[in-house]
Length: 188
Image (cartoon, rainbow, N blue to C red):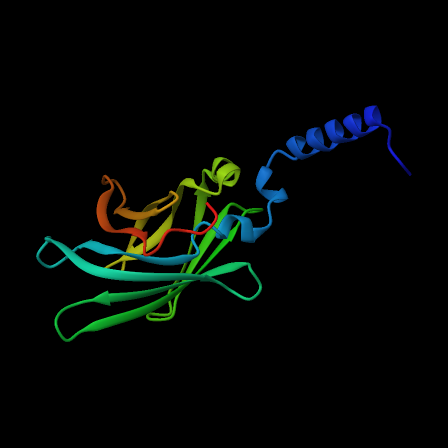
């Protein structure tokens, strides 16, 4: 069936309205579209609060982000320079589930798995960049805490900031990453 120009316009308007009516733009977006901005090689630093001394510690860090074969998750491969003879490696699998607005982090190092509620997905999906705020329960020194993570992705800058709080307290800085791309992204 061939649509006349006026019918094409109506069909387009109807599809656009239905897509907007879905109420959650993310349901229309394939997972790899949300992942693509993170993929690549990054260089920067890890900053964290040492619990014993309460001092800030900075470690040079390299990060390579790749997509899993099924395009549903990302592999974050970290290398930390923790002194003249100590290099630490960690691989984190990160899965963003737009339909449920949840993000899960699974570490190969300590076998931990943490899932957080995600805010800001709709705006993030529009550009493939922006800020996501993750919240949920966690543990710190074997005690329950609330966790708030702020992820900001720009064209050549990626930041991750984690804050925690015990019940009845204010959020306190826990750790943060600041990365720039090791090389400019192609075609952007």
